[in-house]
Length: 217
Image 1 (cartoon, rainbow, N blue to C red):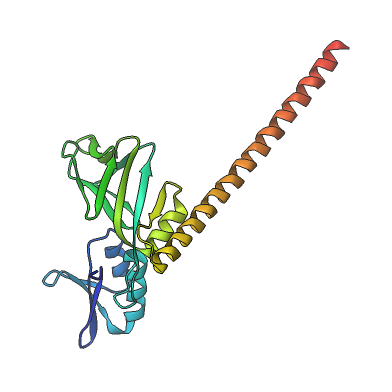
Image 2: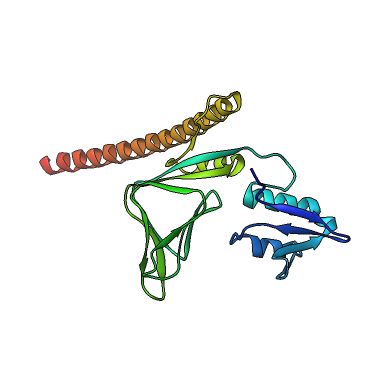
């Protein structure tokens, strides 16, 4: 599979050629990067090469040098989405983009809708990317690093493993571990909420009993 990011070494600089990502321009400028409209690339001082590679790794999951493993994600949107702005992303990848309130949605590369679908909404000035309730889709060829971060943050995202190779089994094990961590974290949250509710109920019952006692006297 082709790399997402290509980094070329020039005489006194390095050149980064990568897809558009909304985080890239401000963060590239923070590292002194200059946009070259002729080559559609960011140009940096060669002394900042490692910082630039780290930046690309964080945004794209690809530093232009290290080998990458790719996985597919299954994303479920039980409540749908209503996201003000012209695009919706998962794991740094463009999922759907709109161009106006009535434009409809254009899907990003590697997006396969299984249920429901995406559209546009909002107003003419403040349009939004939408998805109907119950929408499910696959997002294919996501760098494993970005996929793992997405899975760890959202219980509705999971890694799909389709083949039976050793590497796929390892990815499946990683995916299950992330799933376990998410469920364990959610269980702890539920237990805290139950304890809080039970304590509040006990306080209410005690106060009610005290009032009844005073009333009977």
